Length: 338
Image (cartoon, rainbow, N blue to C red; front, side):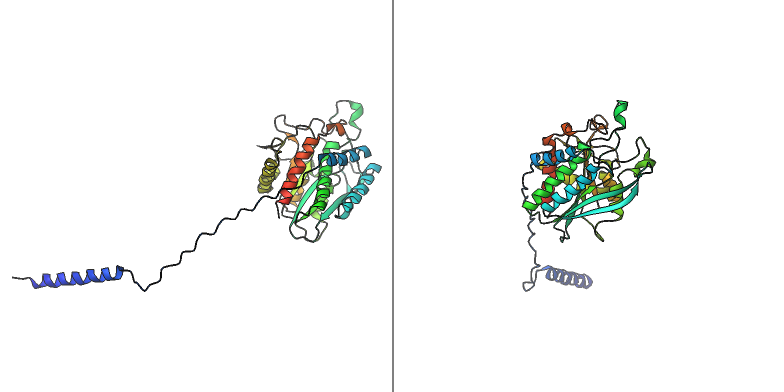
């Protein structure tokens, strides 16, 4: 005896299974989905920059040293400003002298003079390079009381960074970097209150404070900035400064990598130290351009270079190998930025 209900159930199952199989069978007329091949990763070839001439940079440093301390109101100060303008114009740059009346912590009034040299001024793709050219009017770190009130020669602390940037400008005229570069020599960086606490920090860097509030060009901006300070002493140590890490860590890593590529890794160490109020701080805070500081600060001795704010900061403190390292690093960055 056959159970009809089971037959019906079995038949139904067969039909159901057949329908499933039919639905799972590939349709010969259906088109296969297109799979796009992976796009190749294009790595930009490194541009080998021109060679930085340390003899030329040293000559620019020595010319400033021979003028004497570039303290505000002095003949050396005005002579240096005139010389900077003439030289940068010879290098094909568009030069402006930004002036402003300002008061220092001691109540004295000065005419501040920032020197601004623009290379490829019409280019929208720009970077900013800076150093201060003024000398400190006192040598408060001297142990000899007779020297404390004398101005610092300001050769490493000021003139070294300027000399490097002048040689960079000379090279940029010879080989177009393909981007715009603004070189600013700040005035009155080194006229701050001695032994002042954090509340006195703004008595320093008066030139960069003024420029950051009043850029030389309306709506001025740059991709990033690099400040040089004390970049010429023998066996200099350039570590990761705190404000540079906080505001512009990507720029810091870019520059330190460029130093490795260009052979200056022994100067540019990957150690971090505290925050230093320097021109880059105000460029970051006020102008809001990510900016780092290449600054000689010996983290192992917890001090600036040995002649800092002393009468002994003269031409003898300058080493061409250090100038070469810093200058070649800058060229590596500039020519590989486009």
